[in-house]
Amino acid sequence: MDYITKYKGTSATINSRTWGKLTMVSESFTPASDGDLVVIIGDPFNQEIPLVRIHSECVFAEVFDSDLCDCADQLKIAMERLTANNHGLLFYLRFDGRGAGLAAKVKATALEVQGFDTYESRILIGVAPEGRNFRKIGEYLKLHGVSKIRLLTNNPDKGNDIEKAGVIVVYEPLIIEDPSEKVRRLYKTKAEKFRHTISKSYT
Ligand SMILES: [Zn+2]
Image (cartoon, rainbow, N blue to C red):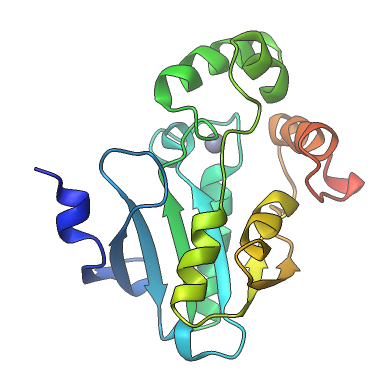
């Protein structure tokens, strides 16, 4: 049964112990076989410039509290910002391993633990350093009448992909204060090799 096609666009409103009322919408933006989520806070589609975060799943950090990356912290800070704003959208994309999936992520992480950075480890195992594309998010926003967003990100690729769908992007940085040594190393790689906008004071 193709549940994605059958249930795409349906929603359920849950009560989060941490974040309050969240409406989870079933959508599909990535090749993941069981779909992606749009998490709606308040009434973002009736705001002049909705606040948006595009988050890629990271099981190691979000479920198992890995110290190699800042993904769980970024998700938490994004949710803090969105709920403090009372209205917003979080796209929860099943792009673990920057789109390469869990098998490749395990292999790349084994190399990261040995000291290779996230860019080098992916090259070494033959995976594209960045395998994600965010254009479908832009198309979704456009379809829902959104022509301009405030995007919580340090990654200009996300904004560029969204602008290709005709949505104007205003960038708002999303950085964790006081990063650990390992996260500083990751920020340095993100800034130097993935061209993310991260101030030198965090690397
Ligand atoms: Zn991560």
